[in-house]
Image (cartoon, rainbow, N blue to C red):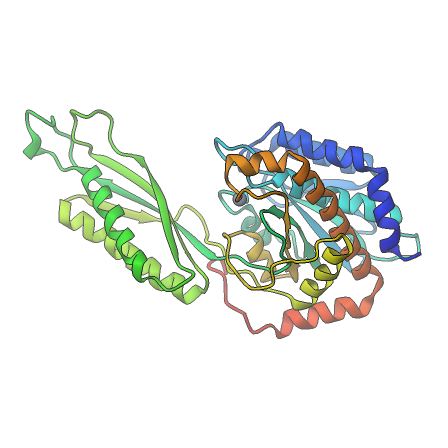
Length: 394
Ligand SMILES: [Zn+2]
């Protein structure tokens, strides 16, 4: 019996525990960098299954759980994203990502014989939604010994194609002068006017943007009372593009517009980046073919094959230092980051995506550990891939 043939029954045997872990995380959403209970829960499951658990780098909620000699190669890394969205809970389905990565490692450990070498690990990765925790973890050397990084993401469609837009975040602040809005309006310098002017002017080029470019954001400070001219206003914006050169050009345009709005209103303007940007995803065709076969094994027969873009992720930065894949597994019809998807992530569609996801990850891990030629081909594809666009963090 092949190892993969043993994985299905092992998932069935552990079905209750797998679903329970996902449900518990779904019921207790925590925001980026604050995934304290989720991180602890995952660590306790892995520790009870015989994994050696330790901190991973400088982020407090990041962890590493290793099975095998930690120096033994190859090393298969499953990542577990943990954070939820403000106001929406687990509307990105990280409960499924975390439970799938955790139980892929547990199931794989259970079915591998003692003759199989290598290392299986789960790395708990904080702050995917805000702050790009994995970029810090790359800098901390957490992925240095990984030969391959595997993660699934629940979604509204099935695809094995790695896809992510590069993204930079901008905080735009305007500083003006307070004044009574009725008694002395001419003495004021209205920071909110500047921000609104910038917002509209930055939205205008959207009609002329090359395909794959996006600009969006919010105004999160715009004054304290209607009868006081605001002396401070702040907005937070994301700029995305499907190539790094497009991202650079568009960022320069947006920054120039922010300064133009300051000049037009007499305000002072600060444009800052709250954190490092994320890269485009470096695809690996050998991993994509491997997962396409596994999707078929579980009856997911029609995965989307064209390259489309659905968002941005700090896992893309990992894909630039280690061969990485993040197939999307359909959990329902609602798009991610909606209340509907939060329900899907905790419902029957999400549970099916989770059980299939454990299967995909565990089987891929088993084959990489037991078929040296497969890993050679994954490495060669990684080295030969000319899509070597540096990430903003590099
Ligand atoms: Zn998300």
